[in-house]
Length: 163
Image (cartoon, rainbow, N blue to C red; front, side, top):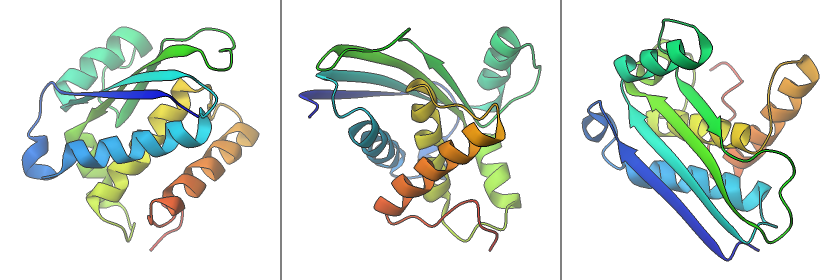
């Protein structure tokens, strides 16, 4: 069981408050659920969530992935190698871009709310910090399964089903 969980949320840019009035609560709830479910053997866990805009995200995406476009979420894992049971760890940083997140939500057939979409992206980002990826079909299927399970625990519909 996690003894201490710190979720540091920073609003760097973008009008998150207007788009999602309770953005801090939504982000905290999603990150907490992913960490408690997937990293319960850690002693102390810290994670940073950065709420940004497309300009900020484009800069990061270009710098770290050589792609001069915004993306919805980027994860920057801090831990390397296997983490020992009851260890204290800073998992890393998750960054979300408001305009891209909203645009893809608006264009989707997803039946949920914008807050559901943000929960999904936070969970997705945190899972990357915990070592999940979607580089192969098998890995993507596994990661999506964990996302769906965690979202269900939060009462959020499966985002991979069309509405």
